[in-house]
Each structure stands twice: as C-alpha cells, then as structure tokens.
Amino acid sequence: MGKMTTLQDQLDEITANTRKLVQPERMEVSERAVAELFSSGIEEKILPVGASAPEFALNNSSGRLVRSTDLLALGPLVLNFFRGRWCPYCMTELEAWRDLYPRLREAGGLLVAISPQTERQSDFMVGQHALPFPVLSDPGCTLAEQFGLAYTISGELREYYRSILVDIPFVNGDESWRLTLPATYVIGRDGNVLYASAHADYRVRPEPEDVLEVASAAVGI
Image 1 (cartoon, one colour):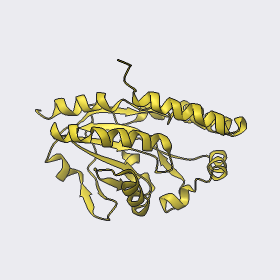
Image 2 (cartoon, helix red, strand yellow):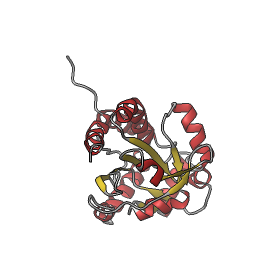
Image 3 (tube, one colour):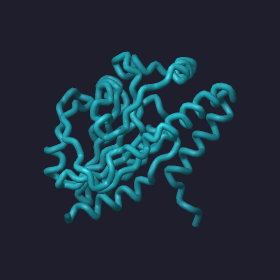
Image 4 (cartoon, one colour):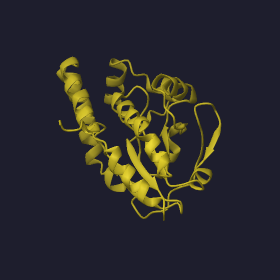
C-alpha cells in the first residue's frame, strides 16, 4: 500500500506548481516577506499552550453571532485562523478539516475557521467548498491580535498581491492591510490552550490528524 498523502505533501505540491507559474522576481518578493515575518519573531510571541484563550463573539457567514463560551460548553474547540479564501494553502487545509470533521464531532470536539475576510466572502467560500463548520469573520484581525497572530502587510507585498489580483482591502472590507498568521489552536472546555501552532511561512501547516488527536484526548478532561 502506498504512503498516505499528508496535508503538507499537498501544500508542497501547490508551492511547486506556483514556482512553475509565477515569475522568479515575483516569487522573490513573497519569499522576502516570509523571511521578514519570520525574523520579526512573531512565531515566538503567539499565545502559548497553558495560556487562557480570549473569549470571542464573531459573526458567521450568515451574519449570526457565534460565542466561544457556547461552543466550549459543548466540547473542546479547534480554532483554525486562516488568511482568506484567496489563499490556496488555506483552502486545502480547510478541505482537509472538512473531510475530518465527522471524526472530530464523533469524538466530541468542534471546529471554527476564523479570518479577517467579510461575511460575504465567507459565505461564498462555505458554499463553494461545502464546509460543514462555522466560518467566522474577525474584522481587522482583532481576535487574531489577542492570539499574537496579526500583522500588517508591507508595501512591497501589497504590490505583489495586487500584481496577482488579490485585493486584500476588498476581501477584508477595510484598508488596514492586516492579515493573520495561519494558526491552529485547541482550546479545552476550561478555556485553556492545549495546542498552539502558527507559522510565519504560510506554506507550512500542522497535520489535522495530529490536532484531532489532541482534541479527542481533551474530551474527557
């Protein structure tokens, strides 16, 4: 039997295809931005395991308010912070979670995906990718900021996004040019962080299977 394809294998394939399609000088801008973000030390400052997670009340793609306290009353919670529906890495990761979601629910856990994009963008995305879990809007990355994940896109990178027709102000509904690091958290029912993973390099994500294990183990706690 062949080796199971991991999420990271799929993401690496996106990177390889991108390198074939995008001019090297454009790729360099993106690479530089990743290196700068990494050297800013942002990864070291994220809300760590053992910390108390901030409570939140954010709108889902239908405009309904979703509260973390209500979710945690039902079971441990996986939070997936993603950049937006324009990011193929984020969408590949969320599709992996879509396929695992029945197992997470069976184990007693829940998942929400959170990004700075508008409810309308999330609504398109939920329909297009048949996502069974809530997709929440975090305008201006206010919640992401509390988790230590928010940053402002540099001028050079803004030009890069424009050149590949990614209109961040339109997608996010504001001119702040704020984004979140892609991140995955598991929050226990007591509100404490049991798992925390965030990468300055948006091409790297944790394996959902590993996160599922942590969430499943937390159900009995």
